Length: 117
Image 1 (tube, rainbow, N blue to C red):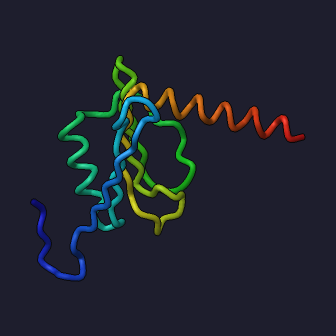
Image 2 (cartoon, helix red, strand yellow; image 1 turned 60 degrees about the horizontal axis):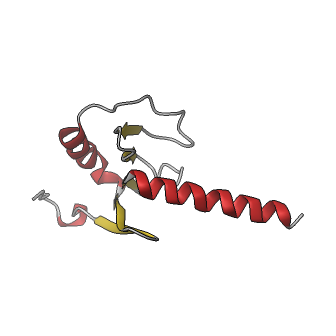
């Protein structure tokens, strides 16, 4: 467990479970306050090793790291999830089937939006 010496800098970890429409748990997301990003990055590197692929150019400020496995499982670490330097950091881990489900859902939404015009 990580502890900090000053009470106003307590770690704020916000886990969220992501469920697949058909198969149950598909992944998780962990958000942390900006001051805890380096701890989250250190944990991710210790757990997953060096990133396996080059991250695309970031959409906003800060670091972004990607890991991907042959099974389709992917992990992404963002220093700032919302694209602003004050936004929380996050680690997103999705199974291959969950990623496929999200991609299919997005495709259906795009097609539906196209039909409205």
